[in-house]
Each structure stands twice: as structure tokens, then as C-alpha cells.
Image (tube, rainbow, N blue to C red):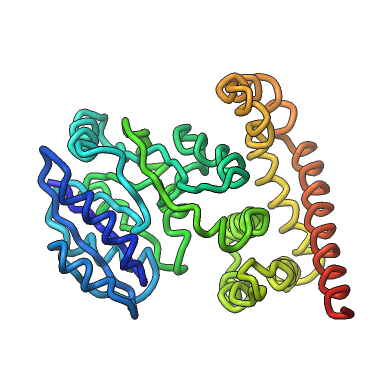
Length: 337
């Protein structure tokens, strides 16, 4: 049996769609657990209508998912986000058969496809969709779902509850030393609503800032991130200037020397992820695998070294402060109007 665990917060519409698909899954026994983090809409009522077991916990995906896992009785756990959509009626039975036959200490996840009618958003997100099937370091996210043996999840100590999010990235980093991720033989669909509502460019930049600060394990940044994030524009798009300011303060709050070291660490992190830079171009030509093979063989040895890290650091510095200045100038011009 699979225990499906869905953390929720004000997701009544998306949750109803997902639960409807789950109860129609064939040839599989499911225990459906919805973990509510304090919804003020009809999320819990929708869950009960579909026969799901509803439990309550403090807010935060890591905390909610751990609470669900603690109550689960299935041999395997499947963590899904409420805005996910399954591909077909035998998806979970096929996934269960696949994971049972896999090597020990294997966690499964689905290929991801973003749902959007916006052509620009669709094209830009092709990179993220492609990365979900690679199982390279840093490519796993909770949007892909996580199917894992309950005993392995327990031995891993569950998800981190340090932040309200990023529990998926932290878990993936630890699991890399314990077992392996494998791509399940089907696709999971997810909403592109954040990119559409907050602005495509703005959301991609915010994701880059978050991952850089997560790499540094910056408590300073994450303690102030919620306040900075709430300062959106009147049209709902992200106001990135407070987030750039918070990032700058987080890097240099212990002094200039420490800040420069922090930037070097970010530069090293960016350089190690340089393989992503050429992917959009090669994906348009359906040559993603060819690019990765060439990168690993020729470019990685040239860049994955101290000299490459320094060049990466200078590149990050230029990118970061050019964007910060651009946003500050734009804000100043807006105030004068």
C-alpha cells in the first residue's frame, strides 16, 4: 500500500482535482492523508468529501509532511503537492511496481510538465521540465513528487523543518549520500501559476537568490525573507529590490572579508551548475543530452577548478549588482512620476 501525503494551505480547488484523480487510480491500494497547515478556505472540507484522512499541523511543508508520514501506515510514502495532476489512471500502480523492483535505497520521482497557456512561460520552463528527468545533483524538487519506502524515509530522519520551504532540496542533498533518485515511468503535471502571477523573469531571479542563500545556509536571509517577499507590486508581480537588498545584507552582515568569501562560495556554486547555461539553446534543437555529454567531457575540467570559481565569482558579482542598480534606478524613476 502507498500512503499519499499532501501538505495543504488554502488549496480547495487544486486539491479537489488531485483527490478526484487519486480515488480513480486502478490496481493499487492507497491511503490518502491531507495535512492542513491552517487553511481558511474549504480545503479540509474538500478533503473529507473525497474520503481523505485529514490531520492538522503547524505551517511549513517539511513539518506538514513529517506529520503525515508519522500517521501513515503504508509500506511506501508518496508526497505530492496539492496543485499536481496525474497523467493516467494506472500511474501509481505502475510506479509502485517499478519502485518495488528497484535497488534498495531508491527514491522515485516523476518527470514534470508545467501547465500553462502562456507561450513564453511554456518555452522558458522547458529547461526545468527537462532537468526533472536527469537525476543530476540539485535537480530534484518536491513538485516532482517523492515515492520512497517508509523505512528509508524514517532512517533519513524525515524532512527538515528548519524553514517553511526548501525541505525538498535539503532532503535531496542528504539522500545523495544515502541512496539514489530514479525517474518514474510517467509524468506529473503541475501549475505554472507562480510564474504567471509573479512575473516569469522575477520568479526565476528570486529562485536563483533563494538557492544561493540556501547554499550558504544563511539564517539571516531566511529570517527576513517572508517580510521582503510580501512587498509585491500593485499588479501582483514580485518587487525584487527588497530581496536584493536582503541578499546583500545577508552576505555582508559579518563584514566585508566574510562577505567576499561568501560571494566566492556562490561563484563556486554557480560554476558547478554551469552545465545549465547551454541547455536552453540545445533544447530548442533537441540536443540536450548531447550538450550534457560534451559539457561533462570538455567544459567541466576547464571550469571546475579554483580559476573557474574566481571567474564565476566575478560574473556573479557583476550580475548581482547590475540588477540591484537597475532595480534601484527604476524605483527612483517611478517615484518621480
